[in-house]
Amino acid sequence: MARIFLVEDDPQVGELVKRFLEKEGLLVVWARTGREALKQAWEGTKPDLVVLDRGLPDLESLEVLRSLRDLDPLLPVLLTGRAEEDSRVEGLLEGADDYLGKPFSLKELLARIKALLRRGGKEGRRYFGPLELDLEARKAYLDGQPLKLSATEANLLFVLAQTPGRVYTREELLARVWGPEFEGSERVVDAYIRLLRKKLKDDPQAPRFIETVVGMGYRFLGE
Image: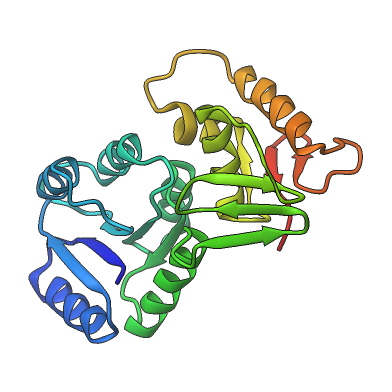
């Protein structure tokens, strides 16, 4: 059973969402504040996905998002909040995997949660041609043979593969893989992409897995 962290200060919205998701077979841990959510996460109650409200009473929601990503760079986060474009764009650029404007349909919320859980590996393994990703064990196999990846290489690969087709900027990848406190050059991303491509036997001119999007960043092919 997937564990969902619901971070929502509105008691009516929180109660409604919690009851609905639990009726759909999900385990819901409801935190009313950002500090409460972080306390539970750091004490070992590891969520499979976080539904995070943009308007928390104590901490800035994007600060909470970044702290959760320090704990688990691959943790799926669905932001909810104002439907305005600026709010959506800011949340996605800060590393959220999806954004749902309020007020929202409970059925749409459930559909988005299920989609993110599938991407996040709750179904175990994903296949991209000859590449197999074991998302629970964080291991990769090419043509049936295990790939020897460093922790950073594995994190980078799994972040890219979490949402095939999505373009990640170097800035986003630095935040997701190296952490928000990293102070080095964005070019470290390029260096690790080269290492990954070599191990994946991926030709930059005819990529099977990782494509360079000129002037923007990188995306993982496959879906």
